[in-house]
Length: 64
Image 1 (cartoon, rainbow, N blue to C red):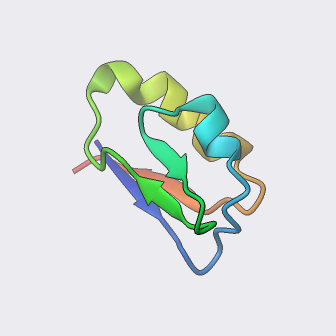
Image 2 (image 1 turned 90 degrees about the horizontal axis):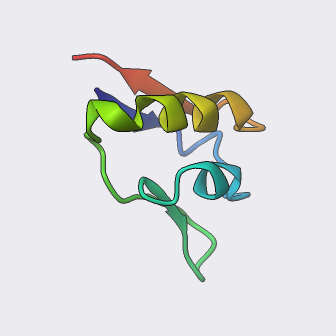
Image 3 (image 1 turned 90 degrees about the vertical axis):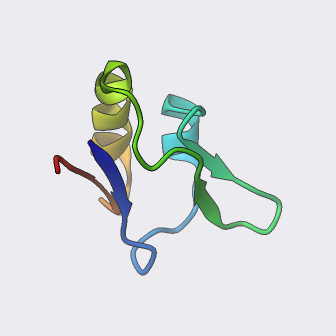
């Protein structure tokens, strides 16, 4: 499983960070950072929720 972010769509509003702070972080520079691009399968539920709650639908999950 791999986290994919479309940075052209992302507005860095930190909804994903509120859901999954182990994976996402919006820093003082107002940019989103993916802390773990290939999280463990145990994080799938949180990652799916973060993707679904993203206001711009900028987050996707790739199953490689």
